[in-house]
Amino acid sequence: MKKALIALTAMLLLYSFFREFNLVKILLVIGGAVSIYAIYRTPSRYIEGMKYPFIILSLLVTALFFVYPKIHIVYPAQVAIVFLSFYSITFYLVSMEEKQKEFFKELTALSILFFSSSFNLFITGKLLFIVSFALAIILVLFILDRIAMIPFIAGYTLIAGIILYKQSGNILGNGFGSLGSIDKYILLSSSFAFLVTSFAMFMKKNTFIKMLPFFGFLYIALDLLMVLGMKLSTGLLYQPVILLVLVSPLIGVMLKGEGERS
Image 1: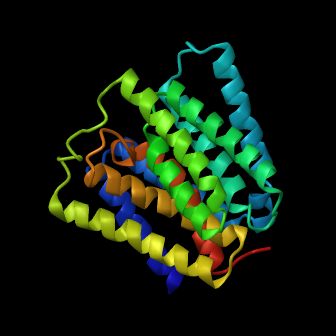
Image 2 (image 1 turned 180 degrees about the vertical axis):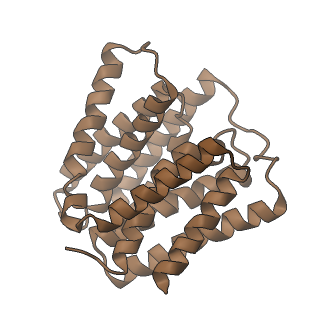
Image 3 (image 1 turned 45 degrees about the vertical axis):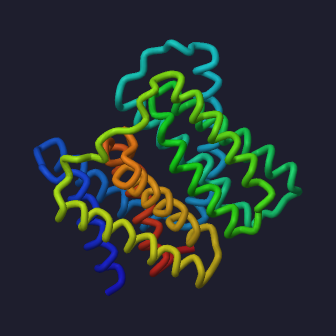
């Protein structure tokens, strides 16, 4: 029953992002559904083992951008880079509780990954994504009792915000005014339903598999609030393909939480 509710909520969330469907969007949603099922069927140890490949690939992308900062990046590559940047730091963050290390080692690793992700997003023109992402990181650090790291992440985010403002000066938009009241209600209710459910699963048992969807949906909820409430000029509402790529693995992991394979 819980799996059926998760699947139904996922359909509502995806509908609220795409709204008007065509052949391309239908194929994208089908691809997302396939990836959800694939993640659900993948043993947890393999998902946890993806941490270091994601981190290495994200750092390699950063190194490539340092060498070739003016390289032309097509849209599919931008989506892949955002995906790598998001999950590289996410995988490290959600594993901090299980593998506790010295403060400065954790801070150094988190700082390097945050810089890498921010730089990758900056080159792809998606730097504003880092604002809501950083807020989610700060909240999770507070929950994990890593309060001493919060000022550093806040400082990095402030620097990113200043760079963004100097580059474009256009941070505020119209709050995605084309979104109707019913669509807005479906969007917010489905995203926060995922957030509450994943938080309950995380509180019940603090493991990598339980914390991953909680952090992911916390980021998505904050991103929606900043676009609709603070009227930021970009975010996941403006990038439904990126949203689909980010959210599909989270839903697959949530389904595993109801019937986890080892």
